Image (cartoon, rainbow, N blue to C red; front, side):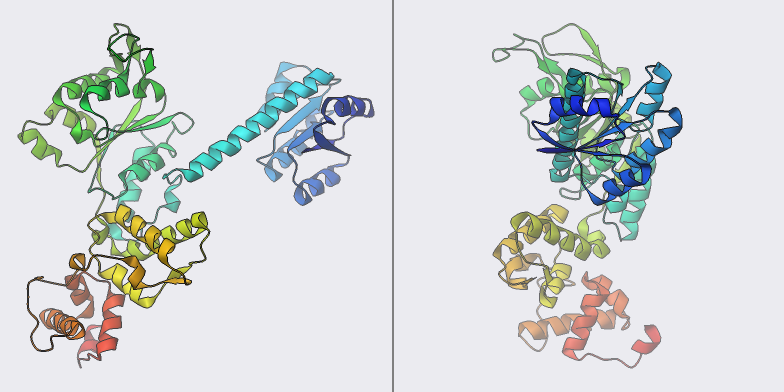
Length: 454
């Protein structure tokens, strides 16, 4: 059963509303401005009917919409003038009914309002499930490099120019392309993503531009391509460096003329699309090797941005790990809430060649394996050969041959080379100052000049 609040509805309409909706909704009638606002603050309703006898009461509608922004409000009023209806809808109402309204009118307006609410809830759910961050303030960016990236992307989002995002695999190119779109003037239009590396070359053209029925053997019906789907919005071309030279020529034309033809067709289609491209390849090198068109490169490289590797943004590592822990604990119904000190140390010392994607997978696996509240280093299951060891991995430790002795020798060697400045030694070792300080205390390493340098 739905719950409906009917405010200040004239007595003669109570029976009509009951006849229209009583079989599927609990309807509460109330009157008085204070009573309405207290009802909205204390109870949750699926729909609100609001009677406005005069235009002066428009403030009451605005207050109600602010109080329950996710609940549709249908206004009922005695006037049928278009300017009144427009003002009511601009003030936040979902629909306007002229009093007295018929049973059918109440039924139709209610159905539309509840369907719209269900669709908005579904969109919100699907957005939550997507790997997209919708607000720049929610992006984890504590390192200077990432702060500058976010600052630049915020500026880029306000334009319609093509963006080229470069960076290693797993650095978050796809995530941030969505953030750009949902903070742009095109945010209400489609955001379409396509990974050019995952689609065979002979099918990629059809995916991008669509095809006509009968264009090739398996083309049994007309297909709309990604450019048409994204019309008015944004198209994210991931791994653009994998596109063949022939298809690059067609892509260049779309970017320059905003037009194309479907495969097997001769009708010119126009699509106003903002393109965000991404690649983990060095495109200038690809150009020199004859694998990427120079004119296309200049066309997509209008607003370039490079995402740093995870090892270049160490300040982001632990906050990201905690973010993924919270995410996977919630989705898996786990009670894991943090990491042990040894796990935190291991996270900081690892080189993360797979970047954020590898970190996410590592934490997800650890959440599944861990039986306690804190993830232990054992359940991180990181390959030891990839851990940062501060220098030549083939170097043989002098003195103590144990693992702890090896660690201490490496730390002492780095400290000596850095004149015993812990911050510089931590940077040389590829760990955070906090992790190094923990080891220094653990091994009882001291130096008389530290107070002066620290």
